[in-house]
Image (cartoon, rainbow, N blue to C red; front, top):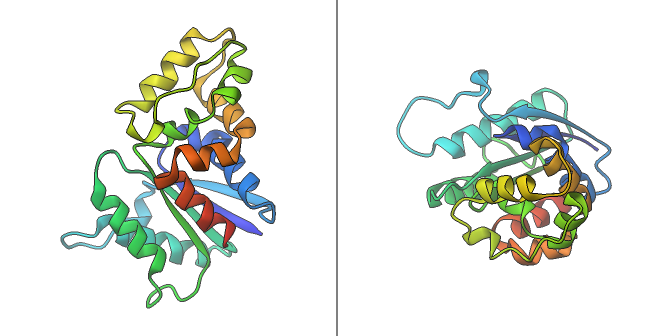
Length: 192
């Protein structure tokens, strides 16, 4: 299965999201990444439902480009309407038919998923990392990740850190600790 990955940030682009997706669904054999902000996928004019419209446009674009499925992840960033709009786009069939898609919302952000498994963090950072407080309730998971990286026993770029952690994260631990974001997303990826 050849999948189009769409997300907001450079950490996802650098392999972290791909590692998670391919580990959740081993039938996915290749992924290509594109930024969610791509200008030619702009939403139509009009009020409301911006993320719904953008997700539908991405579904149509993935089909047009010949991918077998679309995997799209955005950050919730404290805006609950994003969750509602992407859930509606996940279920939308009138414009997109049955085209396979797994639309996900990282609660609060993708960075929270990095904080879920202290064993993976400890391995990657080559030091003991304590269990992090509830990742989905962390007000600034990006800063928490930066702090852990700064205090780790190894030097690496943040994008490499994210990719290394997602390659080692216990997926059940991640589902359990981030049920509203990763748990739902992983179920959607598994059903592609």
